[in-house]
Length: 68
Image 1 (cartoon, helix red, strand yellow):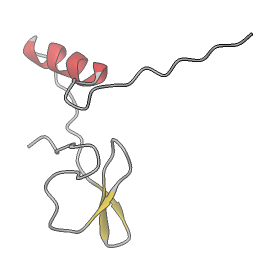
Image 2: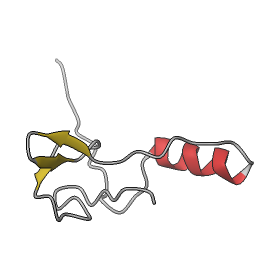
Image 3: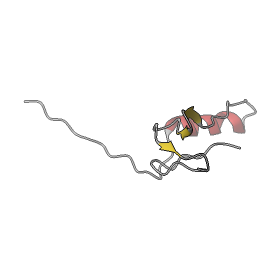
Image 4: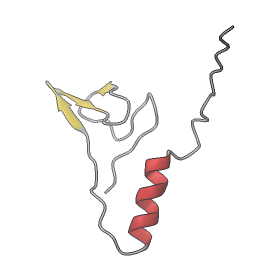
């Protein structure tokens, strides 16, 4: 018998790579700032792939915001 469980992630919980980047930056390491990707005339979220208009400042799908 195979039993599968799905573990839900809370949307407000920081992702592990975000925590790792914060850990490194607090200790003087440079961390690459990630910005919007371009997809035709739309902004694309690098985290979830959601497409947004050119005026978007935050991903409406996952809440990602570019680091300024």
